[in-house]
Length: 226
Image 1 (cartoon, rainbow, N blue to C red):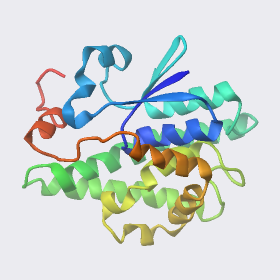
Image 2: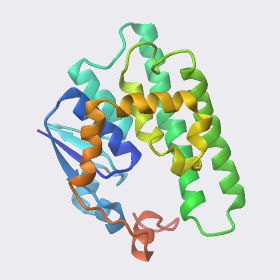
Image 3: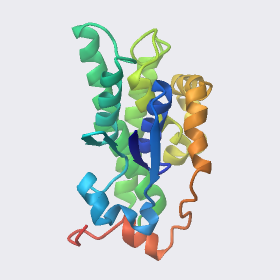
Image 4: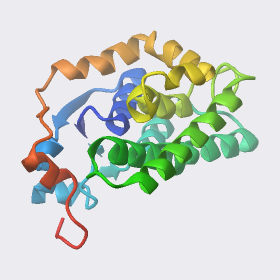
């Protein structure tokens, strides 16, 4: 059985969706980052970057959410396009989510919601880049129902994890400016696998308070040991 190390943030949730879509048996193992559980040496041996998610699939350990999606979908032979040209498009958009949507959205959240005051340049920079990346996705989806055309697949799962959080990333009204992203989000939310993935919220009580202890674990100063 796959051991799935997770919390409820966007990257673990897209892996939860993929596991549910594939119908793979898995054991969810909570990692409460606000309690510093990511710094446990045993978890560091699984993911040296000490982030979630990670999986242990038999003899194979994989960390980084999009790497996990590829591992799972390739292993199952599902949710992947056929042909070299389609694979190139799939990899391009999957990495666009991994290197653009995720990092800029995450930094936007950090500087808008958690950073100390006086970070105006960073707030403007990451808000602009997050909006720009989401705008690219929205424009791409204008001419197709799913990220790779007519068929739901791996890239849609990757987008879903972050699209759920657009109101928190960019503000409550932001999703209205991204109608095609909203359409994709609603379509994925209607899938039974997405509803089962969301049900993970009831499996474990993660620390909700962003107190000084949580800040110390999540936003360690540059130069301190991880």
